[in-house]
Amino acid sequence: NIIFVVKECNVKYKKPAYFEDLIKVISVIDELTKVKIKFNQKIYRESDLLVQAEVLIIPVSKTGKVSKLTNELYFTLENFKI
Image 1 (cartoon, helix red, strand yellow):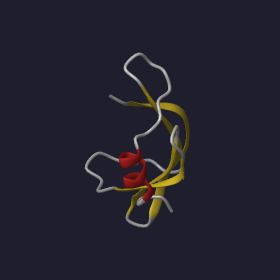
Image 2 (cartoon, one colour):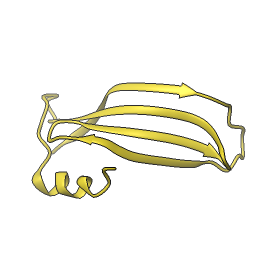
Image 3 (tube, rainbow, N blue to C red):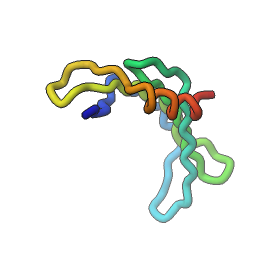
Image 4 (tube, rainbow, N blue to C red):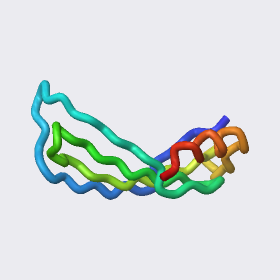
């Protein structure tokens, strides 16, 4: 019954990617509370950093009100926090 929405997104484009490039996406959780998840994401082509982004996600109910993560989901996500 939780929907995740992007509240904020800060993206820095360093270099372009091209069609058929093999890219690697690394996404880690920088900050985690019951009402927000902040991801740090990096996209590479080989050793070249192409994109760096910070994305703030919040859980909301189907009616659009901020919801808290369940304990089960919170503790599962905590394993991915740096």
